[in-house]
Length: 343
Image 1 (tube, rainbow, N blue to C red):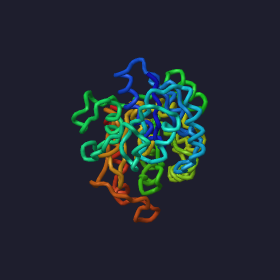
Image 2: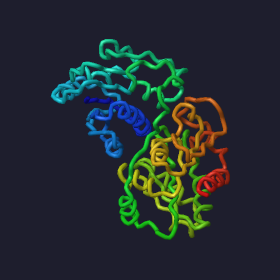
Image 3: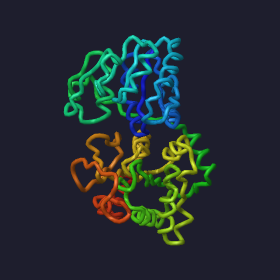
Image 4: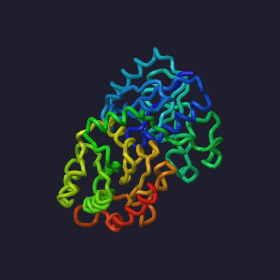
């Protein structure tokens, strides 16, 4: 059986989609699974052993681009896919499988996709509180009415990194072999309202460096200034043990660096989900976003959140754009949770 999956566009969602691929492989061990994904997610898919190949979608996020989608679908006709799973809920995401002539096209109803999908499932959001459950439910031929009725326990994401890659990355970035490495992921896709304040990260780094550890700051190019703010807030004697690699690495390198870390502290972000899928000891910091929908899927995680409920907020209400609930998470609390995990 040949399967095409239209993957999600965000890093964290792509990590969680691995649960679907594992579920499909558990049912159809000989299945060949290809995934269409944005270019920046392809390095993640290469670390999921169930995936045959990642097919790059060269279309900007949110763009309709019917002509491009038609050309991609037409090119895929020769691949002979038996079925397609469409994970995003948008109208446009269901176009490529239709243009590719795939006979069975499976997905949630979404944006009125009748005709585009011919195995269309009706989603009761209260019956599937987790996003990962919604992905996995599509993997069963007989529609599942709720998460409680899933035929088997969730197979959590598991990203693979080899030991020799960790050794190579430590040498490449001149990381100390004498100090345990702790990774901070201080950025967040939707800005400072989902970020723990930089001065709290700096204080936590100070605690860790004082006990003989080193800290690496990870993220994208837009997180580089944030990393510099953290280092600038450190005592001068600590600075040589805190490296800002935000924007200096590709996602592939970030994945390996996270795998090399002894522990991770992260905001609610795509890198948080990568750390969970690598089974690294993780302290996840939540503010207005909620772990009730997209929690890190790991048994080595401590979630800290001081409020309840989801708040759709992309700009914090206090100076610097931070959310008060994240300001209120004190560095000593995070240090204690991380220390307990690492012990």
